[in-house]
Length: 219
Image 1 (cartoon, helix red, strand yellow):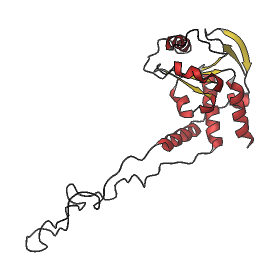
Image 2 (cartoon, one colour):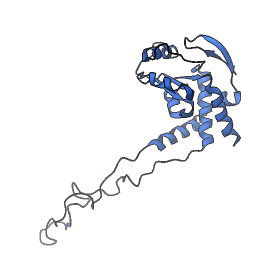
Image 3 (tube, helix red, strand yellow):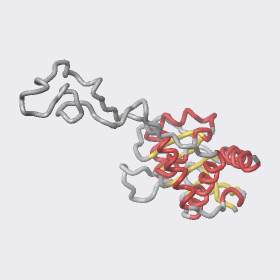
Image 4 (cartoon, rainbow, N blue to C red):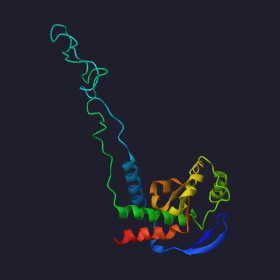
């Protein structure tokens, strides 16, 4: 598979050949869905927490006599059947576990499927390099807009750019762009990849990406 390589003005300056075994894979909804939901679940933190009858305040005194009042017997206002009482079988923060096991092969295969689909949808761009005359967000914004859809909304998540580790200083020039996100090849995440429309990757990152795919597929 041959794809064009662009410069920061979005002019074709070269071509690169990608391996079909990694970048021409049929998209499987079930595989991607399982990986996506598992990653979301693993990020989830147990925050809901209810108090049982031993933790709510009050209830030290017996509300009324055991007999003679005509009412049902009651031993404490902290009972779950009382208002402001404890909760029975409620969510407990230290007991919830949302972690789901997911194999590295499945994660890698899902990544291959997503990238392959982005190539088919013309949402995959390769850039040779980015050099800024002035290290300002405005300069980066001009470049990012070239790889976004025309008439896009700035509230949308539009462009994801993957840079090599030696170019990490570029990341801070895009932090104030709400529609763009820049990360390194080692931190490429499936959740982020699915959230952004267009995918831009440095040419130097392709070898690392293919190496990552080959290592998992061999194991």
